[in-house]
View 1 (cartoon, one colour):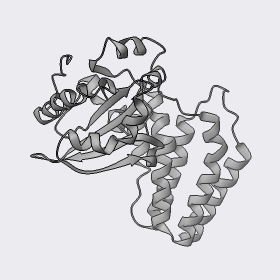
View 2 (spheres, rainbow, N blue to C red):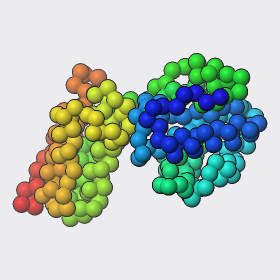
View 3 (cartoon, rainbow, N blue to C red):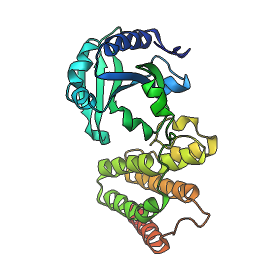
Length: 270
């Protein structure tokens, strides 16, 4: 059983999924296969990766997880693969498969009971005895929203830190931190405000023009003046995007101190 594929699914992706479902459905430890990401929204193109969820029952899941590299090799001509500790997800195997163009596939190995807690509702491609359908009927998909107070408690310390790096002339480190602020704070806040999934800087290009302009200013050129300008833009963007409904306790003293220090370093570098 393979449910209807999305209209936008490219042919190489279709061939990989069709083959994979055939291979995985013959493994008695596997009770279902599903697809997530842009497959769900039917917004795929030639640059899309594949997000494949491989589901085992309580007894079969440990074996699947232990044998995930062997399973990945059985699905195609595997060029390279590594587990997902870098995103705190050891159940994930990030794979690159050979083809006319290399194909990026994320294989996530989960137990059927894990499906109750999820960030999206995957499309079931194959299942035994409607196991996945029943599991997905429990609970609701929810992507974690930004933790606004957690951000406010840290943001002004981060601004001071980045300013000190600019002041010392450590511009690579300052630029690295500006990127962190976009990915961990500004991007999620802007996406959440626009009603989009607050996932780092993913799909920021879909933001309304005003919010997109806010974030464009946080990208710096390789000079102190540009770095300071981008830091100022980051401060302005955060002030615009953080909640102002009283739900967050603003760290006003830290804000004043960090902005004053940024002004001091800017004047010293002039």
